[in-house]
Length: 601
Image 1 (tube, rainbow, N blue to C red):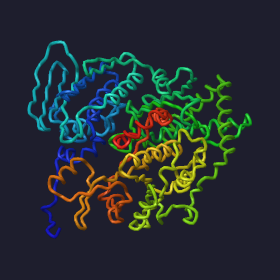
Image 2: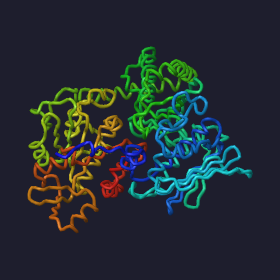
Image 3: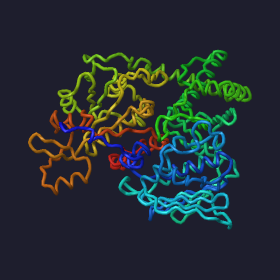
């Protein structure tokens, strides 16, 4: 530390920075699926621009060799442009003033192909354009071959991206087939029918040809529901909406969406705009027909698909999970059109409209009958009437822990300004899918009161009292079971807490190095085996209650040493609910939950 000087300052090359911080550029490094998607995005942009008529994705899971081809215009070959866009960050034709090349595009930041090259042991671009064939081959991100020659034969494709991901940067090299299948399914439904999509894997070949309505019916898993369709186009920008209300399944609204053919899994301003559109419309009309309900009641059992094309969409990160384009921009652009279409849709089908209003009224009556309106006011909870040990900051963290022993230990070493502790009786947390009066459960009441957002139609995310809600249980099957029950309760009763990225699982170690005052948690089997080979003193901990307050601080509270796993909201929540309600599958779920909860819920 004392020798810190100008010589210690490093300036990394662009490729080196990606390799040192891959998660910053591609999100999860569990598998290289995002690399395939980066190449696919460029092909889809050519289709959006009206040029590519064929897009093919070829996956060799044994050799881990992945190929994306399209029949678009081809990357320009002048000045070795394929080499530039594969090795220089922030290079591309999709920034401001891009009308000459792309008006609507999913690629935005000039990062994608550079990241693919940086994280691959082999990377190659082939281009056929203007009677020439260009081939540019990289090994370990270094250009090994660059060749441009004349070509007079039949052009097999315009642009081909081929790569083998480097095992140094990924936990496994197999891609997620389901995710790529879903991407191509959505793209085929969004783009004109003269664009063909081919996926080849494991000796199989699949061609995609769904339309939006069939895609949406597959999503809601029924052909019986009445779908309302809205559409507004301000060329080249466009907003298409399909929605319905489902009689069964979760009461929480489920929306899946795409922006410029990109799946936007965490929603964003376009979803909030749509919610406001429905709230304002149904509440204003309810007065005419003498129905009374709360604005959020119109979201009960809502199912929707939103498809949006924007010239300059703004996302929260490079992985583009959340749209942050200002809602007012969407209102100004599409608001009046969609409002008129909503009026017309229900003027033409008044029976359906009145049925919706009646269902909202019945839902409100049911809630009022159960007297759940005032659970949790958003005010500070009194420790006289609750197990909550609160913090003084409005930007703190709430630890929901299993049992008084663990809670007591954490309370001794917490920072009272930042850490709130809520010990719950784990086995008293009910299964949200099988408990009729879930809101009468004492543990659930404690949780809702502590969080402060209220539930159901009175839920208000702005009243949440903590930046993070953290579940901390024992690192054994019982602890995993409790984690499962608590997480599903939050997913059903307080889903927006997960959607807002505020819910986390705290990993707790089964093993740690304990030598005198030294305590080093061992999070992985590799760390454990390394410590054993080194002859270190290793202790196994059955649960949090066996850890000292000092050790709990290292594992759970210290931001430098703790291990928090963010939980993402599932697009398949109904399937999870069905799994939870099936007694025969519960035991199987509990056995799997500790290995799967670090993935999407």
